[in-house]
Length: 205
Ligand code: MD6
Ligand code: FE
Image (cartoon, rainbow, N blue to C red; front, side, top):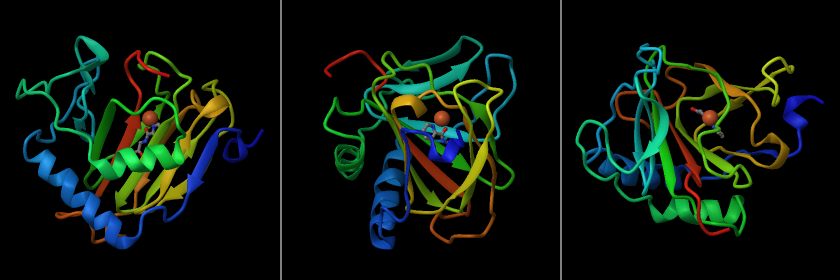
């Protein structure tokens, strides 16, 4: 089946108005001041091109110890800041009435950053969807299937777009081939910020 029509993949273009994008970015950047972006290293020792931080009780990290969720920022040792209410509301609207998210990974793409094809599979229960919000420059998102060898297709994610991986698409491979530099003026200093909301830990629902 063509991946973009795969059951469980949903793209909601312009889910956030320009005003809502700016308000959300302000809330996110205030939290980034407490939990700065850092450049993670893969378990194999390669620095990623994407810079990361997290919001919420749990945050996704990678280092020589592997991929995992943890409650504190690896550099400051402090708990991650809270998830803005606007994101919790968006999850309730777009991802359903199940358990609320307990993790929000914040990815920063400056010029040249990309993200290789991967599955989101470090969460306790794949019954919960993953919801992503894009802010700033447009990205070329590649979506495949559960098998790495499945065919892939690409779709552009623009500022304010929301996409959801749920059901059969929850474990689909996906990645960011490239970001179209200068396509938006939203992010100070340029680039793209992507927020992915997850239910990472075991828990209600
Ligand atoms: C990104 N997104 O858009 C990377 N994961 O920068 C993801 O890795 C992702 O967009 C799970 C569900 C939706 C996503
Ligand atoms: Fe992902």
